[in-house]
Image (tube, rainbow, N blue to C red; front, side, top):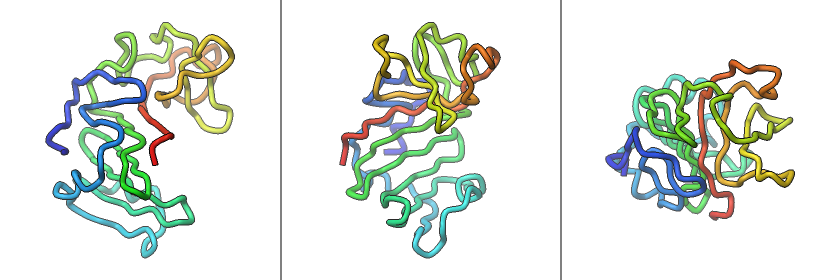
Length: 167
């Protein structure tokens, strides 16, 4: 399934990103794994994905909500799976060249998004506004976490396409 990676594939809100489809089963990815870490044996540490040299599978312990993550070093990708093995979040960063939304790509300024944004006050994330006080579910951006007026030069570092209804 890693052979389906397409760094030029356009993001589809709530459906796909970089050639990966939400809802895909973890089993499809297992033949491509270079290293596996059991989170019950080795607790979470930010150096786990940072020191990854290939394709790493991390099994999250129950204290973090269970599930699995696959970290790909180049391009920078994280695939998050439920504890039942369904792909629920696709996060891409450096190396992904596809269009995210309205022609905007990783590394572009957040201000290049010609759509109202909503900032998450608890995490440094930006969501597309639905125009009615809510958000468009299925996509978010990481670009510093400040309101655009306070940081107009913020660049998009990562984007996530997700479906939290998958179990």
